[in-house]
Image 1 (cartoon, rainbow, N blue to C red):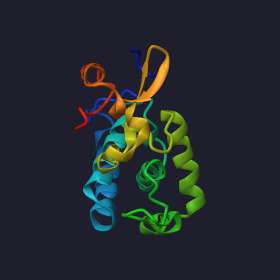
Image 2 (cartoon, rainbow, N blue to C red):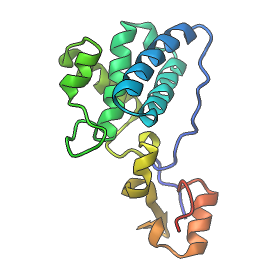
Image 3 (tube, one colour):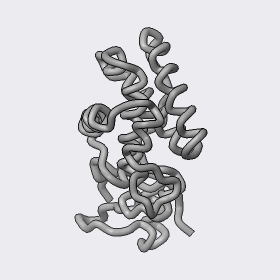
Image 4 (spheres, one colour):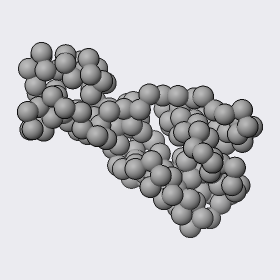
Length: 175
């Protein structure tokens, strides 16, 4: 079994350098407020982790520009990964609705979110930034490589599942 490069979830780290911590706290408070009022705690948690990851970058992008724009762009990026803008999903917001909650123009926010997405190599259903409630149905979380073949770990024999879990390739042992 080998580790696929983008399928090993990042450890969740909220450590933030002291110098940038006040900006991080402003951004996180803003994303928390919108998530708690319009989305859910899962979105708030992922946004905090993405804000912390941005804070740890050297130099931190959070030090450049408006914290409100960063907050909205972080939520926009997490929303894109998790299909927030798809009306068949719950919770759901349109991109325009999300931006209006922050009092911002969509063009400004989508541009900043694109930078975040590129910076972290994010993509739809990215296991590193997937809502925990979507993990059971996210095929990207369960793909593993065994002897050069990709397979869904949920369909693998138990000993392969256990080894994949031991190596951190899957989030938990499927039933």
